[in-house]
Amino acid sequence: MKETGHVPVLYRETLTALELEPGNIIIDGTLGGGGHARGILEAVSPNGRLIGIDRDAAAIERCRERLDRYRGMLTLVHDDFKNVRKILDSLAVQEIDGAVLDLGVSSFQLDEGERGFSYQADAPLDMRMDRTNEFCACDVVNGYSEDELHRVIKEYGEERWAARIAKFITEERKKKKIETTGELTEIIKQAIPAAARRDGPHPAKRTFQAVRIEVNGELTGLREALEDYVSVLRSGGRFAVITFHSLEDRIVKQTFRKLFEPCECPKDFPVCVCGKVSQIKIITKKPIQPGQEELGKNPRARSAKLRVVEKR
Ligand SMILES: C[S@@+](CC[C@H](N)C(=O)[O-])C[C@H]1O[C@@H](n2cnc3c(N)ncnc32)[C@H](O)[C@@H]1O
Ligand SMILES: [Zn+2]
Image 1 (cartoon, rainbow, N blue to C red):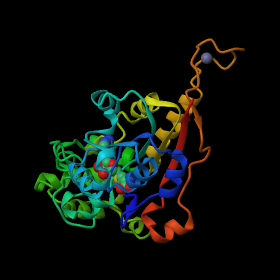
Image 2: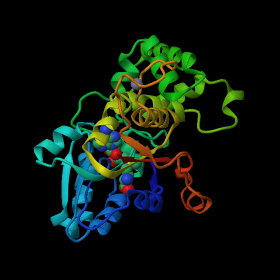
Image 3: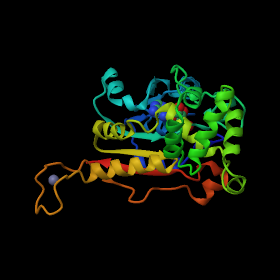
Image 4: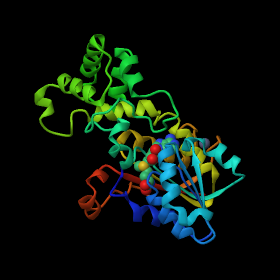
């Protein structure tokens, strides 16, 4: 979602923040179109290495072609970036010099209408980033109870009409299984009162985001994964994370704060006795956001936020 016309979001900012040097070993956990990856490969050339991960096999294949000239420096891994420890073990890599995660969906995924990520194209309800998984949007929309749908749409979509949307979905599917993004979009439109639909983003935006997050388990285990990335960084190594919505950004911000100030002693203790020591320095006190120039070229970047930390 955060790159259009294959211009990666916050590209310069991310590359600068990583403080790359030739010879570095870097992980890009969200390869997507390989935009950030290409910049990283250039910067760590000629003897560095990029371990590029994506759970979407199409992204891996695209990068295999696009980044062919860096073949000798690039290791492509079709997996969930959350498995970073297992992945590094299997490659016999103990420590890395830096890592980047650019969370969410890619513009390729959105633009490939038939994958069902977009309410702008009519397609089967799919939304799987990893098409080797079986669980898809159709299972959420047709299989979850009204309560479960309510929770997902409210929590992951931050949608104030979640209860009505969940009710309308469960009513509609009694008549007929809901099979396409077009059908779901129509139901959402009926559920949200016309007055509330008049301004703001597309009425289906929040619900689609919610279902997508649920299908792909995007927030599940994210905190632990961020901790794992910090744990495999060498001292002085940088970790950059780009988020696209407030739920993700909150998790990133809180996890980094905890790694920075891990002490769990009661506030009135004169000295720390828990012994937990700070693991990182926070490089971005406030998240970096796209400037006017980037927003002019790429409106999709609007809600992107970059947070960077350094391992102590
Ligand atoms: C926003 S795009 C990345 C764009 C990329 N930075 C670029 O410059 O082209 C996010 C990518 O991360 C992948 N992705 C999302 N969550 C993932 C996960 N848990 N494990 C592996 N890949 C994931 C998606 O399949 C998608 O291709
Ligand atoms: Zn303490």
